[in-house]
View 1 (cartoon, helix red, strand yellow):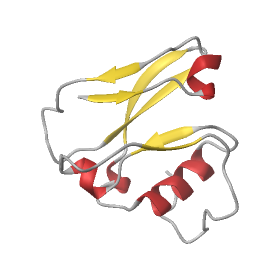
View 2 (cartoon, rainbow, N blue to C red; view 1 turned 30 degrees about the vertical axis):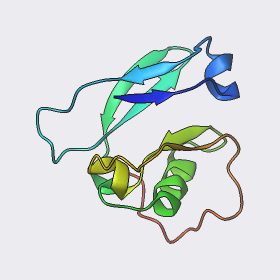
View 3 (cartoon, one colour; view 1 turned 90 degrees about the vertical axis):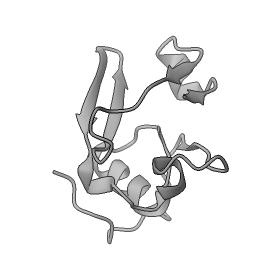
View 4 (cartoon, rainbow, N blue to C red; view 1 turned 135 degrees about the vertical axis):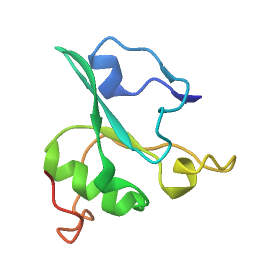
Length: 103
C-alpha cells in the first residue's frame, strides 16, 4: 500500500489523501497515475523502471512541465520497507536534460 498525505497540489484537486493498494498483474510493468481536474488515469511508464528519482523527476518535468509529482525510486519499485515517496511541488533547476526522453 502506498499512502501520500495532503500536499498543496493534491489539495487543489480536492484530494486529502491518496491510497494505492495491490500490485499490477505483470510485476515487471511500471505505471504512473495522472491526477487532473478532469479525472485520473493509469499510464504505462516502462521507460522509468529502475531509474533513480533524479532521472524520473527530470523525465516527469519534461512530460508534465510546471506540474507537481511524486515518485518512488528503485527501492520502492522492489518493495523495500525502507523506501519512501518523494515529491516535487515546484520543478527546479537540478532536473537535468540527460534523463530518458519522453514518449
